Image (tube, rainbow, N blue to C red):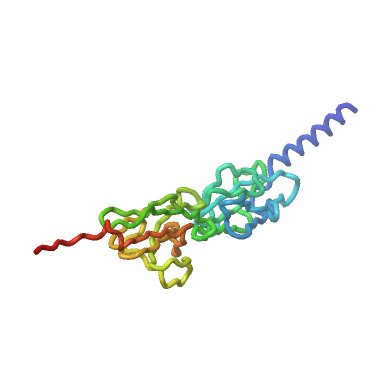
Amino acid sequence: MKTFYLTVVWLLFSLTITGYAQPDCTPSGILPGAIAFSGSYNPFAPNTVTSVIPATPAAGQTPVEYIWLKSLVNVSNTVGNPYWSVVTGSQNMVQLGVEGLTQTTYFIRCSRLQGCPTYWGESNVVQVPVDLCSLNYIHPGSINFTGNFIPTATNVVQSTEAASSAFGPSVRVEYIWLRSAVNTPNYVGNQYWTVVPGSQNQVSLTLSGLTKTTYFIRCSRPVSCQMYWGETNIVEVPVDLCSPNYIHPGAISF
C-alpha cells in the first residue's frame, strides 16, 4: 500500500514538473492580447498605454510574461526590425506608463509563456501622438522696457522670462519679434503688427530708428513648428520728440 501511494505521488509530481517546464513556446501556444491609447500625449498628466485584452496561454495555466517595445517609426514588428527597442523596466507590466516623450512614438506589448525563450508581438501597435506645437504646451515668456527711447543711447527690450516648452529643456524654442505703432491686441490677421527684420531667435531686442511711440511683442515656438505664439505681454517704448534733451540747438551770429 505504501509503495502504491508513493508511486502515485511521484507520478503526479513528475507530470506537474514536466507540464510546467515544457510549455508550447511557438506563437500558437499563446493567445495575443491587445493594447490601446486615447488622445494625445499630455506632458502635464500621467499617460498610460492600457491593456484591453491580456495575453493568455492557449492551453494550461502557465503564467504569461510581458515586455514592451517602442519605436519612432511606425513599421511592422518583424524579427530583426531595427526600429524597435525595449522600454527599460517594462518587464511583466500588463500596461505601460509613458513619460518623457518629445515626438510621436509607437508601442507594442510582447508576451511569452514563462519558461519560453522568445517573446511574441501582440495583436496591435499603438500610436502615442505628441504635439509639440500646441499652444497649451508653450510656457510664454515676458519682456519689458524701462523709460523712454533715447536716440543717443542703446535701447533694449529686455527678456524678463524666457519661453520654454512643457516637454522639457530638450525641446528648443525659437523667437521672432513684432512691432506696431498702434497698441492693439495681438490676434491673427491684425494688420498693425509687422515682423522686425533680423529679429529671429533674439531673446532680447535692440532698438534703433524710432520716431514715435512703438509697441513690441516677442513670439515663440518650438523649433520645427510652423506657428509662433505671442507671449504674455506687449511692451510700450515711448518716444518723446518734444524733449529738450533731444533738440540740437542751432547757432546764430550778427
